[in-house]
Length: 197
Image 1: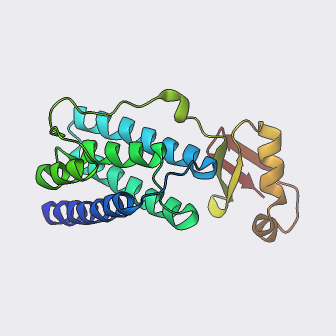
Image 2: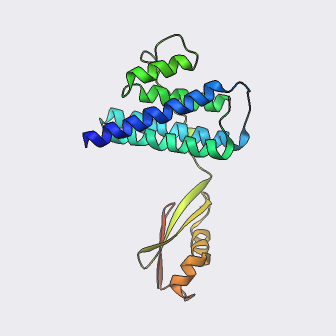
Image 3: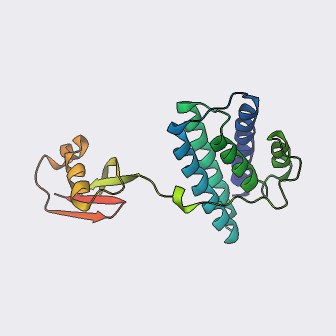
């Protein structure tokens, strides 16, 4: 368990270092409306999760959450690029701050690379904003007779009937229901539809 924790932490330090270096090497300021909401949501969710995990002494899950954030940052970078923007600066500085208790030396170096003269270890803990934690999209797992058959990305404000209709309309789901009407449908709001045929 300790070896896996160290390996994960090592990957996290390396990936964080690479992202910060790429950000610091850029010299053009952009405003990216396409990625900023996604970037801010990912960052605020991670700040909240890591803060709570540290308070509850769940250090493994805190590190795992940071690794998920780094993976998310790489996906955003691949689709939109990494740019010198307020959103990217906030995301990277927040990552450095929440990583600091686990990797004090490298985070201090990265903090200075980001242009700060003080230490990251005193008076710097990011705060999350609840307004960024809401998503306009929800992922619904669709099961047929208890077996996973689809994952749907649907608007988060869609009602039960809309979710059930979307689940039944999915091509893969139709293969497993043989286009028969379901005997029963169980909907767990915002998470799951189980179709019993």
